[in-house]
Image (cartoon, rainbow, N blue to C red):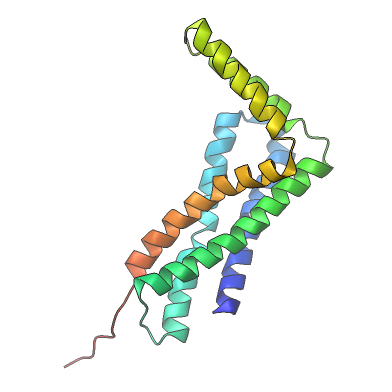
Length: 176
């Protein structure tokens, strides 16, 4: 089981990290944060499709074609964790070794979106304070790690649940 988890988790983490780093390096300012967010989640879904492949591989090759929902979910969750650790590590290394102005640029983007929202000034002022607070908190590496995990982990959990449900097989049907 460990080999399958590591193999498919490493593949997923490498794909997500590569897409992230390539899009930052080559697309940079050419795409806005909304487009970048959509691209990011699409790449997560594509990369985390390895969860489905990993569970199926484990079921068919190590469990003789039979797997419970719980065991399938466990395999998917562990693949998700491996992929998430790689993605989070890549992001934190990038953020702390590059001369990126990501948090400042993202805060500016959020401020502009807020000013264009048509919200009452009191609401805008309150949300601007939240943006400033979040930007300050994001300087803490532990906060960066937690927020980045919260980006990918729910996607992997959802895919793990769906894959476990689709791939569970309590017995092998024998021809009569």
